[in-house]
Structures are given as C-alpha cells and as structure tokens.
Image 1 (cartoon, rainbow, N blue to C red):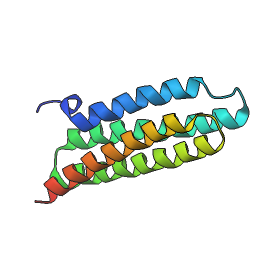
Image 2: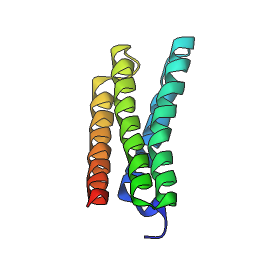
Image 3: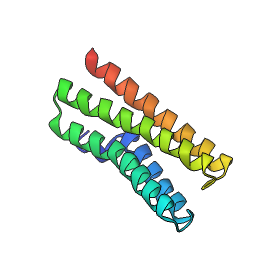
Image 4: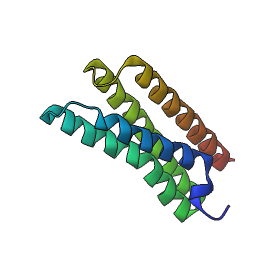
Length: 118
C-alpha cells in the first residue's frame, strides 16, 4: 500500500466526515449549535488526519501513537453525537448510524494497533 487513502479505516473515516457535514447543515442556527458543530467537526476531522499523519511516519511506535489519537478522536465524536442527540439536533436513527460507524472505525483502529504490536 503506497497511500493512506487506500486504508479502509481512512475511507470509513472520510465517509463519516462527509455524513457529519450533512448533519451539521440541519442544526438550528444558534450560537450553541454553531459551537457544537465546530467541535464535532474538529473531532471527526482528527480521525482521518491522524491516520494520514501516522501513515506518513510509517514507523511502528509512531504510527501506533497516531492510531491511538485517531481512536480517541473517534470516542470524542461519539461523545459529541450523544450531546447532539440529547439537544434534539438529530433524531435517534441518525445517532445510531453515526455511533455504529464510529464503533466500526474504532474496531478497525484497534485491530491495526494490535497488528503493529506484533
């Protein structure tokens, strides 16, 4: 593999990023919604950015470090979606889809981390 964009986990993260952008467009036009939109956008963006940065370094421990950060950003995204759901900015079906996607990404990252430890 010669490019991080070939990684299935990066592709899943990019799809999630695109879905989050669509979700944000439906948020109310309030200051609180704007702040929360900014935060969830930062957390979801961090997933793929850290995968890409770690891949570029391609050294076992360093790559592993960036994958851990990406996994943390995945958890942060779930946390923001929980808040977004509780504020009724999205319905529970959207929340469940985003949470499932985050769980899948988190599992892929964990598998990659485990494979680097061998």
